[in-house]
Length: 474
Ligand SMILES: Cc1ncc(COP(=O)(O)O)c(C=O)c1O
Picture 1 (tube, rainbow, N blue to C red):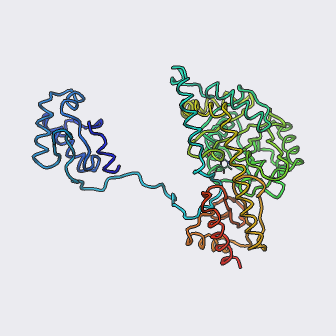
Picture 2 (picture 1 turned 180 degrees about the vertical axis):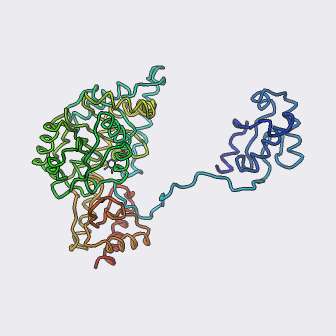
Picture 3 (picture 1 turned 90 degrees about the vertical axis):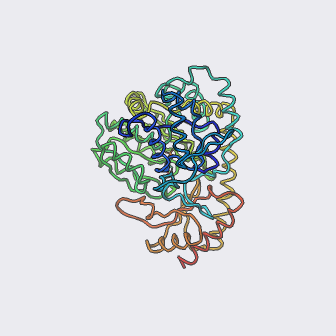
């Protein structure tokens, strides 16, 4: 906490003091020792305003005189100072050890040029729309909206989501099928644990896929089998030869991270397998809203809602920090998923559910997606144009949809060289090997995200990319 932030609490914030008997004989001594220790450990940094003697006495259930004596002693020793009008403060940095303060999370580097894959443009988050939605929703919410809620989420949000998903994504869905979650990662964990609870022991996933998602599934106690991926998406015909597999987790609309769309033939094969083997398809529709070229195939859920568990998220459409997602779950396993949600954390927060419901109802969500689709398409075209004219020898895959494209490379050293050159230039990129997307058969390549970079330095970011690729690949 910066000193200026500490000082804002001019009436003194709440203060935890451990007054256990080991701190000495008598309450006054214990209070003195507790405050001394808190200052020494860095828990109370310089300028922290201590509670007024009357307040602290009330909080601790002691007489005001006891607190006044303790403060007087600490003042005499130079630990704290009191001035009329500005309260009693921690006087000086008497810290004997470096306080543990939350720092930047590991890997949270600020890139000068940000072409990291999978991230939307955070600077375009619809702040004004969100604030308006929040204000309206809060003003209209009944008191019981703030009580403990149901694990499936608020009915109003599930109704709004069902309408949106049927209209905009072609799903066959009613509000009863919707479970609100905190995003795909939680959705996947709930599903994997629910399936495991229903006797599923083996699940298929795509290779390549997100290592985090593989870990989430393994953590639920099921075995993983990897499905090959090619230009027509995951090789779902492999499922017929895998009798133990009872569910398949796929990204059919834009395979992550290769960007392939699951072909109509394979969609039919997949659903045939699910019907005949009593299996489930888990459809991760993480960036389905952003398709730029070609006919949208639409989610496979629309083809057979009884065999598909559909998962959506706002992590690409709004921002990953919002932590909001949804599941459309066939009736036979719904209770098991809800049970897992109750065991995890109960349900999503009321405030964000209310605000998102309002954003959906007001058309603000649609408007934002439409705007971002145009922006991202323009950026993608700029990127594709630069690559085609300046590095025509490089191939590009997965550019028809989503927030990133893939540049396959011939060998692992080339990927490493490009990433090293990029890092030296302050350019954030993704690597297929570096990102541990493969389990058995790694294929090198560079993942380029074109959504995260702020508009004003996008073309410089593309120049930096071309430079990193040029020196390393030629
Ligand atoms: C394949 C895939 N699915 C889903 C997500 C979104 O996950 P979440 O909703 O937990 O942010 C991501 C984000 O990186 C992703 O890469």
